[in-house]
Amino acid sequence: MTRLSIPGAVGALALLAVAVPAGVSFAGTDREPAESRPAQAGAAQADTTAAGASPKVPKSLAPPAGNVLHAVLKARGVQVYACREGAWSLLEPAASLTGVTLHPVKKVTALHFRGPSWQSDQDGSLVEGSPEGVLREPSDHPDSIPQLRITARTTRGDGVFGKVTYIQRLDTVGGVAPAGACAANATTAVPYRAVYRFFTAKG
Picture 1 (cartoon, one colour):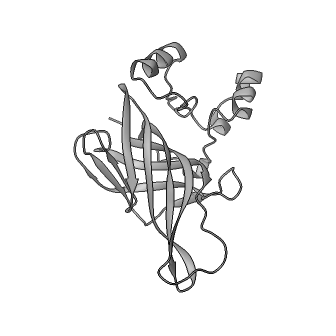
Picture 2 (cartoon, one colour):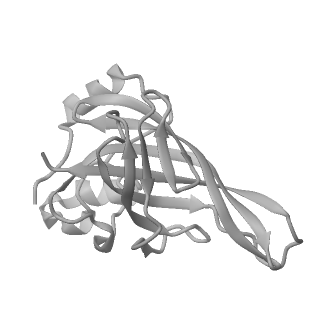
């Protein structure tokens, strides 16, 4: 497997150069799943994993061979639910994303909304995921929406999302629908956050 990572010093300088906002950390998000790396990393790797710096990627959510990591963005937003027949049903996500592309390293921002779709607010490019064949794994955080692997259905433009093939939603926190019954026509928004990783076909 080809290992995709930004060398430490270069990566740090690059992230400073694109002025990623304070408090937004991407440490470890461009690495292989922890379970697929050799055990030789030792105590340092264990400390990093324990600190939560590198989200764990379930093997089942890995994209097929021939797809490479293109961009990593962190999302904050809400999962919007509508009341249908007395129960809450997902209507749409609404989130803002901030992160970086890897080759070249540059800051990117985007919006996430119904589709599910992700659109760059810098270059207008868009990727829409297919509702079919979505793979799911439980979140490592209690009472949180699942982690996902989504296949891109359509793309638009030549920008950051123009050639995306797969999307991972990882390290999810929150976003679960309220428990219990609801009143007809009601809607509610539940805060959540996640890491989204976007893949493209290896050129």
